[in-house]
Image (cartoon, rainbow, N blue to C red; front, top):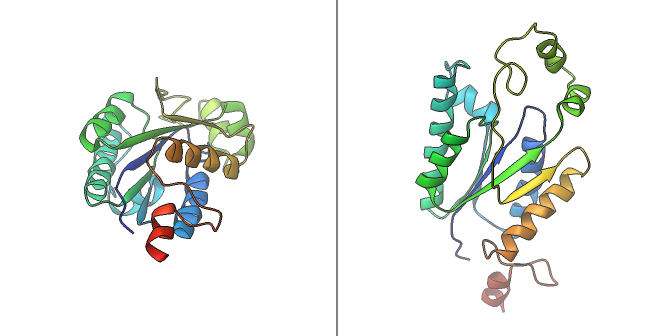
Length: 192
């Protein structure tokens, strides 16, 4: 099966559900036999961006590195899934311009819900002023102006969010819809 690469770029505050929704998409893409890679923000910081801090310059460098990997994957017809906070709009827009085939997914969740979910207590510390440079509290987060998809994780399940993304991808021609046997149409034709 041939496929065309593109990038799904998740953005949203810490704990909003970017990685969780990515995991659901991972399962669904695997079931479809698609070639894809997930670039999770925490994993990237451990390997590709080790040593970077959380200044604006370091955050921009981190996102540019993720964007470069997504660009290479997309160019080689692999679906890239980037799941990083990526707080600054201009750097996300820069990634979009470089990659070209780019779907921005805003994972939206109110801070009070995020604080309730936060098992590490980071939001509580940030809201109390004990934790500096925390995105969305003491450091800026610039929400996308026109994302292709918005997932409202305070009122929908990760499965529902992933389905919303898949519906967008199928409706826009990014992915072939599944036939009744759970196979993308081009695969069904190739296997007939």
